[in-house]
Length: 256
Image (tube, rainbow, N blue to C red; front, side, top):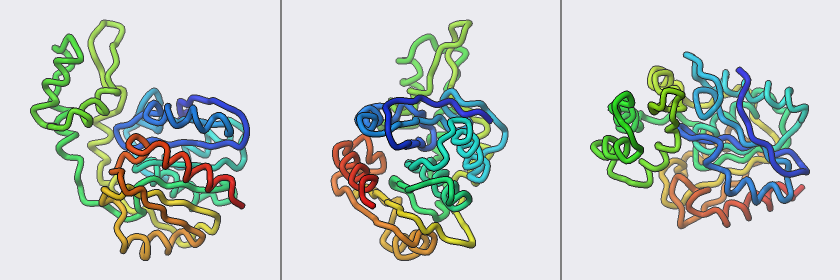
């Protein structure tokens, strides 16, 4: 599995991993700011963006994908930041390969298992007949039957692309995501905690990280951890509060 990535800037290496249904483009704006001081690698995880598709989709495999990329790039110890599903990939990587990472940043996700809560989105995406639509507006209209939020529809439609025959396709491997959804929702576990500096960033309006998670699974698995809350942000913290995320991350990366 050779992951697709985009590189920018110079300095300390920083890998950024997107969330479920996302692509590396979701972090493009913040990555440009980070690239003024860091060598940033935006990564498409397996079954997403322009990375290869696979019938298998779980955190062990995705962490191994990232390790292969790190080896390919010859950056033995990058800092790694992940949002949501990408945060669980980053946590798994840190716990499996603690000598191959300097610092870990996790954005609005806990290591715990989550109950299924993307069924509506999967149903909406599966409902679109891409063989008949001729415009993005038609896709949006079909998604709107299931998804009220225009922002969520816009986020999902970043996965749309035109094939060589001029029909539309999804860049994500929707069948594999649906088939392996229990693996996406699964907990991150380890016998030995990660003992290097770790930052969790929580959206104050989000319910993904609860107080009991901080004192439970987070502190159990990450012994040198800070948890920071951005009050005015929901789950897409980096999109809703980019300045605060930038300030927290740069402070964290520059502190010994």
